Length: 264
Image (cartoon, rainbow, N blue to C red; front, side, top):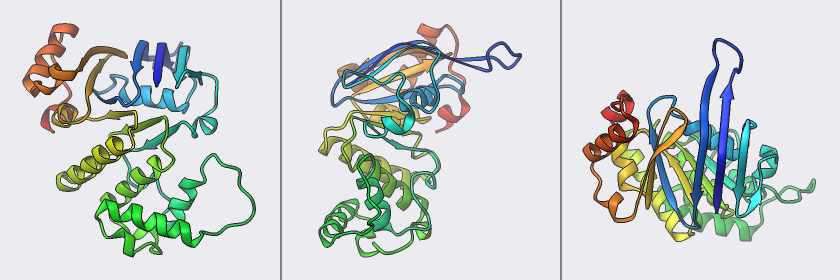
């Protein structure tokens, strides 16, 4: 479903602030893979998601989604292949619009639009059923402005919107990092449910090692713009945080030093 071939990206090349963010990354995801991504600060985790989404051009390499080369395709044209949820709960929704209007926008993404605007009774019924599945009471607040929702409610709604058209690839960029632990656990549970029910292929960046181990069928760890660990199946199921730290030190030659990840 996703293939990255020798992806390279350098920021501010030729200056004193030059930073090699991706250093020849190769990665293949099969249909239905749910891969968690972890690494220290500056490891390249978010950069790889931005490269896949087309947020900025890569310096070298190729990106294929469902066997289609999207390397040179701009971000707005990749939208039909990709759903994305950001760290900031405010980023994925329109605060001044109603819940049902936000869902309608998500449903129309990438489709031909006319000047006519309206949400049919059939659509409203569908949205109400979808919201009910979230178990957050939002099905009874469909005409509420999204700006009135809590961060967790907005992130759950964003997750629903990002997966509404069953994207080829779902990108989750630390989408629970800004939430309190209880709300984060709820959103992660919804994430598991949506990915499993719709058989989505997903990449989830997280700073939390326990979450990286507990969710998905595969785990990769990045360091200095490269993938240094790739663990799946039974090996992943048996992992502990201590195992992960030890494996990282074995392959990289240094200790894992991200305070944010270690304290999570």
